[in-house]
Length: 463
Image (cartoon, rainbow, N blue to C red; front, side, top):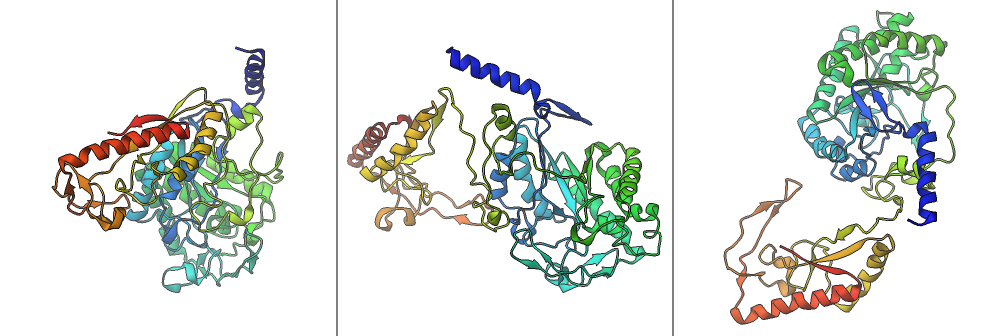
């Protein structure tokens, strides 16, 4: 090992030893490998309130082994929504949609909590079932507010004050959402009791003007939050429950005349439940360094003292499944001669199974591959090209001049349901290759292999 490498390794070890953020932490029954947590971040990309497949990549990118992630705010019922395309967890469809996302986080060793949420009066008719009024602790109207993008203005509908006898139904919504989260595979839930949403509309005296057992005194104002905590804890176990509180904040015109007393009362009351954690928004929030969007491995960046990505706030809440979501650059480190194989690369025009898959039979394709191969080699990797031919696993639209796909047989494949669970993938009858045609296919593989070497890759034959 060179002196430079030795010095770099020593510096890395020294940095690890002095950064508490990188040390392990036991959070109840969960053993965290470090203390950096992905906070719940609203992204507005769950079309129709159903989590989408692109969230698999988003959360997987941000997962580290033994790291804690908290999912974006997730509605507990159809009355809980106040923003476009935020996810829910009150239907079977939503639960099933969350499962592959949770699986992706677990596959990388992450611990995943779902933040369960009701916006209360921070809503309008368009987000409510049948265009009804949003519900709250009060009937006081929230005045228009500038959206997080700094451009749009949010208008709110006059809320409907919940009747006393309706409140247990909302508590039950949180309980069922927690049960559904566990069914989806989440390790636990975080109850969103902060930032001016429904729970805080009960907690804060600048909003709560009730005269029943849920209003007036501090104890009464905290009753709703604590009933939710108790119901959720009883349903899934307190060791799987966290809560977020912001007694000092005044988001959505939800301030309190004595936030210190409110915060201390809630902290003391929560102690008896044995929750996994309390996620507290502090009164004096400051950003250390510059704000950034770092999807890959934030602990590793701190460990290496690497720079953080610049972000573009204008893209945070776009409905785009990539831009401002999964397209941030990753930390570049030397890969130490790891082996990488490409996805299947077609050897000729008749090879395709899927749209927009790459090929390697033309000069243009070879030249396009070269900078990709160079980038992999620059990080110390070995790059193999997988060359393939789909045969009968194709259809007319992927074949030159709409001809039949070729195969060893003329037996037709049966229809197959695509991964989205909706589309049928239809296979046409294949054409059986004549004996004298087979050497031409062999030659296509040979030429593709030569082209791969010309592009700078090694070869991997497909099955």
